[in-house]
Length: 185
Image (cartoon, rainbow, N blue to C red; front, side, top):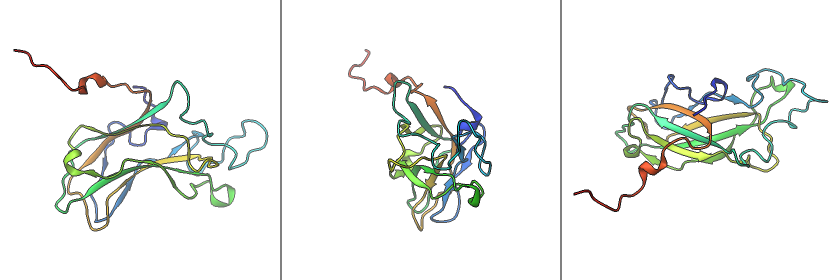
């Protein structure tokens, strides 16, 4: 797995706690696709800069070397009121000079759906997905983040996200999870 600190939503060794008040949403680091960071003007690479002309093109996530996201738990999740977790990949455009180069409205590009606490065991990859093109089609996001959403009136009493990182392709031994249709006597 290739790891880049600028692309880590939840860096390895810096777990994100998902313990909080009822209905809380926990956010990962914001990844700037231009690499300069939130609040910084975009560099002038070629020609005139337009806040909505750069960012992830429609071809993001298309091709032979498609990026894969992996989100793993650290400590196991527990709840006393049937909390579930929904993991969302969100994207936002740059608000520009007048907005202080902050993220605009966040759009959900991909989400896991509800994951019960029993499936959020310790040290488990709980969400893996291929990097998808941005949606709507004309969205040119500069900023990405992950949102860890719990439903209203529920919460977790324990649970952390160990890491959430992109890599170039799956790097796990997927055959280890294949069904075994034989026994050894």
